[in-house]
Image (cartoon, helix red, strand yellow):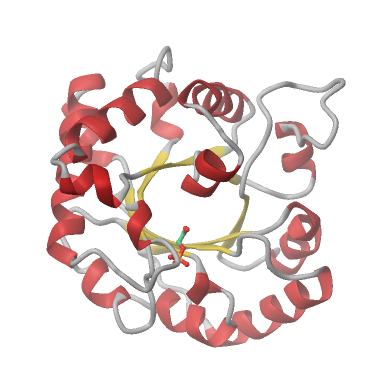
Length: 249
Ligand code: PGA
């Protein structure tokens, strides 16, 4: 299984800033056969970033999509548009989408289905709030999020999906889950996926950790047995920092 090192730029960078990031980043990364690199960029940067990444080992992803094919959905972006702009991955259900944009588990399920239908690889984000963790609800929160996200998605289709465990209290706060806590949560995610699908899937699905990953923490996080990659927000904005993280072997 290849380690996936993914950056999530969120609502940052203009087209020219994105271009100069990729130019610098490309000069600083090495190709490791066991690693895949992914940049999840704003819609407006997808085309230039995917052009700039052609011929490299960097995949390009979007940060959201809408669950309809086309039509009167002002402001929305369809899966076809993402593919056309060069995306091959898409983040789905990021906690900022859930909280700020009121995305429901049902929306997330529809988004997963349409992404899979079009051959986009979804990175499904799940995670608990601090309150939920402290009141012992970690397992049930993850179970609800995963069960509803995967409702009516077949055993074959689900194999396109990557899962990202992102405890909400660790996102953008500088608080990283300890590598042991993160690994334990990944074990729980695998247990739930075994229940929903089977052991073959839960053993082979990539589960990324996200939440304040930085140049000082990524190596320990990635060394944990149940962690198959990282989803990096703040520390993916600087090409030098993100190149360091991307160099993990
Ligand atoms: P962060 O963001 O690394 O800035 O905490 C991670 C994410 O939200 O994907």
